[in-house]
Image (cartoon, rainbow, N blue to C red; front, side, top):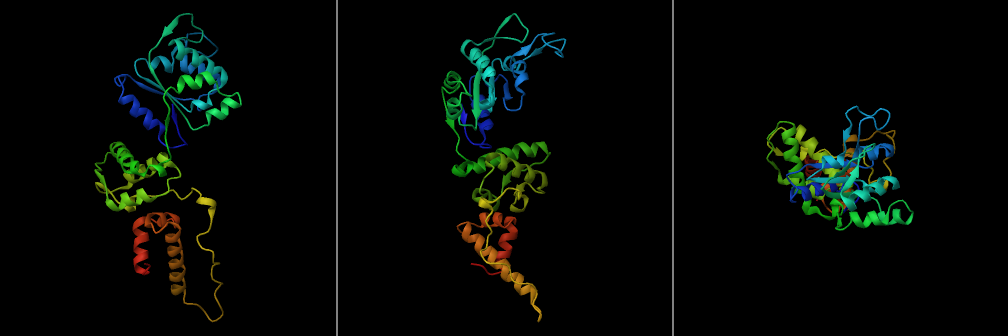
Length: 295
């Protein structure tokens, strides 16, 4: 059972387990338990015979459990299973056997089961929403995945993995990430965890012109709220144009300098973090810092 907050890369861990197991030659079948309507979950997991219910295919259907024979069945968001589905899943885990919906023939399947959730299962058990016996069956081995901010040594290896994947997708030969871009990635606040990193690398692979990802290729999503949505400066903006006029360029430089200086303080002196606070790419931030002579 893989435990971790949303976006921490639980599916990547499940995939790594599969491809390093004796079952690696078999399929890895992923079930998003939160995405399948409860009334369809049994037929999706275990399949159905022809004519089992109104609208059923005339040929019947192999369920996801049967498709995972000899491989790995990955139950993602397992905390979203309803109690009825939990009981049927538990029976299969205990016996390795099940019946299709509308079927009379018992089917035996051997598969590795990996589950994942971002929910507090102990809390759900206390509320009677998750079975204790299923929890212990699924959680023989538990792997807790910390947020990406707490395992920064993983950032570049994961980024390179996604880079190869999306380079192939877009028909590009992108071989590396520049030292400046690496520094930028390593210093970001990864509120969206691995999912956010994947998004940024996909965009970078799409817009990159060369074989190396540069800082300007890394576009950070600015729609995510900052911590507490606090303003960078405590001072108010300057008043409107006075009657005797104003030297706008000088004022703009002064304001820009204050924001950059304050962002550096908030980020602990880290340029990549300050650039993110100001919604600037890394190269632009460094250029502005240099021309404004900010230490």
